[in-house]
Length: 321
Image 1 (cartoon, rainbow, N blue to C red):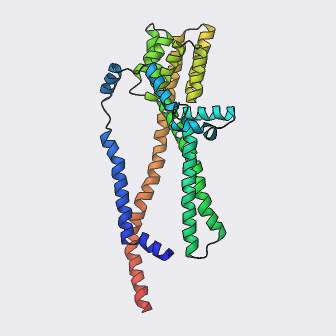
Image 2: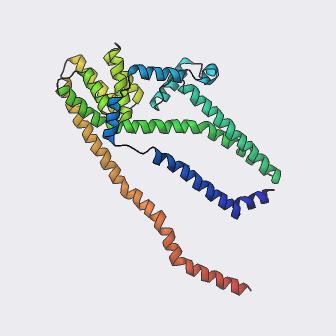
Image 3: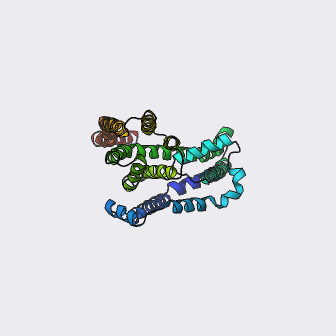
């Protein structure tokens, strides 16, 4: 049975099916890229200005997301320890999922992925064990490894989403800081400047714009400015924003000029952005050399040594007969 499966997979029909499936997967991946083509940034900004999303609309959308079908299994899909639940909600917020039901969805996906891959592992172990004598440890690996991958896969995906969101926020923060400085020096208050920056960054840096917009709404709702800024720094978990919040709080507590503090910090952020760009540029030769070696060395060796190896093989075959 195992031989038949191997012949079917690696035979002509199996290779045709594999290539056909790969082609279909690439087509399905490419279709959304053509359908959802990026519009002109000015057109996006014009559309956002003509159709502003109010705080009431965001609140209604958040309430609709809470009233999901998984709410009835809340006690099963959420940690019962309040500290663990708070920590998990913070992890989801840092990944860009602020809805209350995000924790339930995450644990549901983790459970489904674990059970699905565990079932696939059980079927695979049964198929290979029925084909011949298979050691017990190999059968256990066929079962345990897929289930472990299904359990750890969502965790790894969540970490990658958090890292990507941090990079997006860190990349757009110097521009936001320069714009905030311009608004403050133009005579606007810090609250008005934050709201203006949130509006202007919606096209270029939407992730950072959402954070500034949330800060603006919370300040309008009456929460303390220091508390709102600290909560923002805790949500994004970016060192630059932690320092930015500390600078603003100290400037307000000691009565110093906010514009002067922002000017000095904006200059430092520009220098850091240049340093990050230079660091990435310095790592490019190493990455390019490794890619060049992997892509050019095998073809060169095949062209140079291939004919000699073939002639040696022919000589050995003819000498054997």
